[in-house]
Amino acid sequence: MASLPDLLTVARLAPFLIEPLQGAFTVHERLHELDTAAFERAAPRIRAICGSGESKVSAELMARLPKLEIVSIMGVGYDGVDVAAAKARGVMVAHTPDVLNDDVADLALALMLNIARRIPQADQHVRLGQWPAGPMPLARKMSGSRLGLVGMGRIGQAIADRAKAFGMTIAYTARSARPGLPYAFHATPRALATVSDFLVVITPGGAATRKLIDAEVLRALGPEGYLVNVARGSVVDEAALVTALQQGVIAGAALDVFENEPNVPEALRALPNVVLVPHIGSATVQTRHAMAARAFDNLQAHFAGKPLPSAVRECQQ
Ligand code: NAP
Image (cartoon, rainbow, N blue to C red; front, side, top):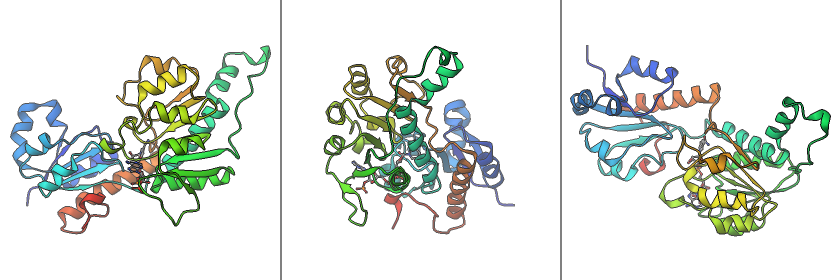
C-alpha cells in the first residue's frame, strides 16, 4: 500500500479536523514546536501544512520543508502565511472563505448591540443585586444610526445586510469603490469615521492594513462614536485606542481581536467602556465544522490533482 502524504499541523486543530486528516495523511502534530529532533527527521518528507487563521507559516519554516506543496488554512484570514515566499516556491495556499460570513457578521452586530446597550453591565446590574437600588443609566440607541464599514468584502457585505434590518445608514471604505453596491464610498477610514456612529473594521490583517485605525481616525469618530473590530488586532493602533478610550475621545469599543493575542493589555481590560471577547468570530459548532470540511477538501483536491475549492486570491490563475 502506498504511504500517506506527510502533513505538519501548525495550530491546535479541532478533533473534527484532526481525525479526517489522520485518515488521509501521516500527521505530525506541531512537531516544529514540540519536538525539534523529530521535526528534523520528518521535515524532508512533509508535503502539506494545515493551520488556522492565526497560524504563522514563515518563509523560514517553508524553507525547511523541501517537499512542501500546499498550505491549507482553516480560516479566511491568512496574514500569518508568507504567501509571496510560498508562491516563489510553487507552494499553493488555500483558505476557507464564505462559510464563516454569517457568524462573523452576527458577532459584529452582537458587539455593536452589546457596547451600545451596555448588555454586560446590565447583566452585572441584575446579578450583583443592584436593580432594587435603582435603574441603570440610559444607553445608546443603535437602530437608525450610522454604520461605517472599513472593508466591504464578503463579511462586510454580510454585516451591511444585517444592519439594513436595523434601519442603519451604511457607508464604507476599501481600497476601491464597489459601484454595484447601494452604499456611500469614502476614500479613507478618517473620512468614513466623520460620518459614522459605529465604525466596524473588517479588512484583512497584514502589512497593508497595519494601524489603519490610528489616533486621527479615532478623533474623527468622536466622543459619541463606537469602534468595533472583528478583523485583526494589527489593523487598530491598540495604544492609541486605549488613550482615546481613557480620554473620552470616542464613546467605547467592542473588540474580538487584539494586537498580541491571547494577551490583552491590563489598561484595556480595566476600562469600563469596552466589550472584550476572545477572537470568537467564527467560533460556533456549525461554522467550525464547515471550515474544517473546507480545509480538508482543499488538501484532498490537491493530492487528487484537482482544482482547489478555495485557493487564496494570490494563488488563483
Ligand atoms: P474579503 O472579501 O477579501 O474583503 C476584504 C475587504 O477589505 C475588501 O473590501 C477590501 O477592499 C478591504 N481591504 C483590503 N485591504 C485594504 C486596505 N489596505 N485598506 C482598506 N481596505 C482594504 O475578506 P472577508 O472574507 O470579508 O474577510 C475579511 C477579514 O476578516 C479576514 O481577512 C480576516 O482577517 C477577518 N476575519 C476575522 C474573523 C474573526 O474571527 N474575528 C473571522 C473571519 C475573518 P477591496 O475590495 O478594495 O480590495
